[in-house]
Amino acid sequence: MKLDDFYYVGKITKKFSFRGEVIIFLDTDSPEFYHNIKKLFIKLNDVLTPFDISNVIPNKTNRIRVKINGIDTENDTKKLINKEIYLPIESLPKTDQNSFYYHEIIGYIILDKDNKKVGNIIGVNDQSPQHLFQINASGKKILIPINDNLIIRVDKKNKTMKMKLPDGILDL
Image (cartoon, rainbow, N blue to C red; front, side):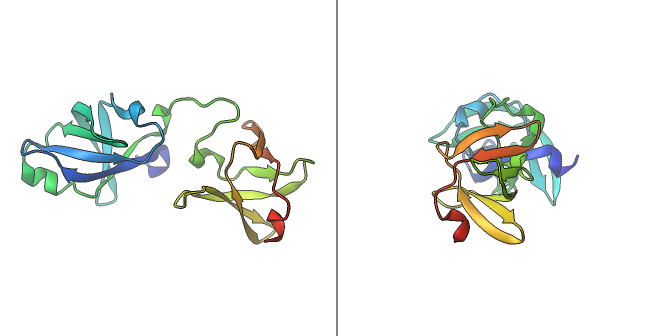
């Protein structure tokens, strides 16, 4: 199993009970998608290890309470605290034409409204309140806000994104 075939879901934040249940923080805008998972992958010693799930209960916003098969004691759960959770990329719901997951647009070419190449998406900064595309524009790193009002068209076949860029953004 290669990490490239998986996406980060969240991490185990704490134990819930003495019967091996844990709380998982979900790093997502759609936590309800994960209320019916039957299997997850926990990163243990840099290896994604599959675990079957017997029960999932929503627990606060962006959190689920999970009973993992084979994890039956409080001591078992302690070993999983702060471990990252992954799922296979193919389990993601399909997106519509102008929607995308951040991992799939890395390498896309950004075009301005006149179809002039601005640069390539080299990353996404989602650690700030305003998520940003990280663009390599002829060796210069540019940050462009991710905003539906700025995205004109996403061409998944040609891996391009046409945007209405704010005045002066390329001069920063």
